[in-house]
Image (cartoon, rainbow, N blue to C red; front, side, top):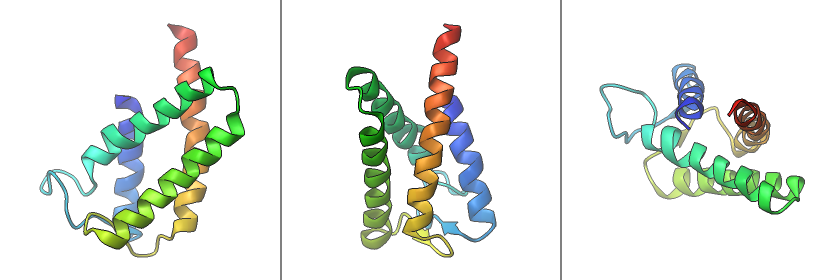
Amino acid sequence: MVTLGLLNSLITNALVRKGYLAFPWRLFPHWTQNNIIYDFLLLPGFALLMIQLHEVWDHFWFILLQFVFIITLQDYLVSTYTTMLAMKKWTLYHTALSAFFVFFIWYGYYYWLSSWL
């Protein structure tokens, strides 16, 4: 989960530096430009939960679409009703597209790592 959090944090920091996203409220504003709780705990934890759900319930595409929908809805709600996320050049389409591809990356990484264990 830490590896997924580091990857997510690197991508998010690059998006903040390029001006696509902003996080006006952060837990450690002097250390990082992103929301560290979301990048290291919530998003990777939710992705791993959905991957585990795939092992129990073998409907990959439905689980993938649920993941994309929930992440996109979460970004919409957080950016609309809180000051934790400000979308500048980033749109909900970008969120859905990145969630789609990131789920495949995390899915492959999870099964690659579990094959070593």
